[in-house]
Image (cartoon, rainbow, N blue to C red):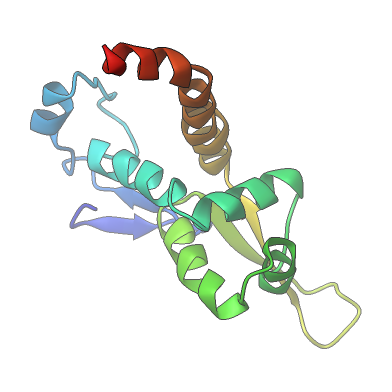
Length: 148
């Protein structure tokens, strides 16, 4: 990620206007807007984080529910809560999810929950998930091509 950053309210990171890497952008044929909030490296990191397991499962679970607590995620994914915290932090750091507290729970303790950001929804549905589905659909064709 870039050196000069500002943390957003949802846990994501904004880069300084001069923090882009135009050399990498042109090598990969990616043309980011001048006022892009993220560098190409930051976008690639988002996909790297989202495609790891159980981060992908967390994103899928959050896409099915509006919001889930760490305990609810642990139960839904049948994983230890301590194991999920590492991935939740990475997803939050890359602005794919956000963490909020709802003080109106009717108890002394606020309800802390996670939710997908718009960016997280886009990376999941139009990126990782769509890519996996496309690869799986074309698997036979790809396999035939390399067996020749």
